[in-house]
Image 1: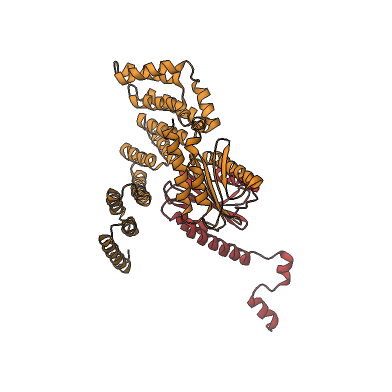
Image 2: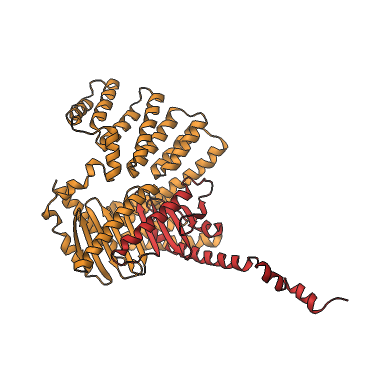
Length: 149
Length: 364
């Protein structure tokens, strides 16, 4: 999953990029090269999901639904959260960096994420019973069709 | 950089310079600065922004670009200092890098570096950096725990830097910001021992003596700031008593905002009063409550995430887009049916919030 986040962290002004499950469990985190993850990724993911969870009922009062993208700009930095199917893509920006500048890179990261998860699904091992029934490879099939003497 | 890139960058720079010579507008200054930034010449980009600001004072985009260029230069310097520190750790490098982190607002990183410095034999100056970072963190996040930690670090700093005014002055700043006047008086007395007969300090001592009777203790003041999220000087109760005259210009501005295409709701709230344009009756009331809740939840969340005070909240989804600006004078919000917030809405909403702050300040 690092390959999804690495291009984001290369953008000037991005302090940290994270991928989290919707319930706040971090999947992957990336900081700038040569730096350790000073912010606790786990705590940040938990706080973000807590915040988004608290916004739901608040917005529900007016029957509003704003679950796609959320930006929280503070005096010491900006948080951008983008829903990505069954994951949450997060980026922490330096103060003064515009969240709009990250709109396109985040969409690109989402596409990468979709590609990576599709790739993972294709490469995933088959369940044992199906694996036994299915031919293992083209060579195996060739052997069955044209058995050697 | 490849030859082709360099050649293309030179052409783009020449075009941007020609455009700027023809028309010295903010857009052309910004375009030239961005071209310099593209070839990583951030110092030149900053100079172009400064030149633009000299003729077009306080243009928001140029101001933003200038601070961004400054930040990028500092980031470059921080990167080279970090690698130099790994090779040969020296107090001068620690100090410069920590100052950069403090200037950029990367307070956690500054604290980590100060701890690293302490571990490698740093003394008073390392403590001083650590205390400054924690105090700045407290001023931004206003958590009681940070305040206590900052005071403890300042006490250690005072021991390490005997007869140095800086930690005492910072402690005084903290005590004054939270409104702990008896503690402020005690610190000024300590400062007077270092600078006997200083007229400014003596005047402050007299002021704090008069205020100390009714003021809370330091611990109570820290608790109150954490509870309200405001320092006494920016208490919203003072703003609420501004009166009707100050809030009068809000309604036409909100009406103007609500009349724009795609805008469905425009809200301005102060204290328990809300002005809503767009929906009416119970729906308007629910919208106002939703905006208030979003502002309250976001304030608390931003502090917990270490983002400091909330400047704005922007949400997008099936209902379009929502922009909430929790400001000193109140909360301004606009909801649009467009998937992305239309360009003109943010400045219009900011203008409403700023007008209210100015109105509040002109009616103390």
